[in-house]
Image (cartoon, rainbow, N blue to C red; front, side):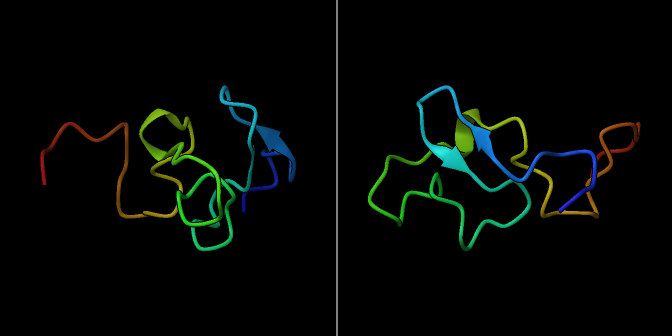
Length: 58
């Protein structure tokens, strides 16, 4: 996880999420809470190959 991101982040749904750690994140839809991924600001964090500043399409 990036040092710029707090270890405790509360999603808009009220679920405590773990940005960059999709397997343990409570918002991943597999931990008894609804899936927050499609609304999560940190959704692409686990995919370092994605560069939001890139002009090219993969």
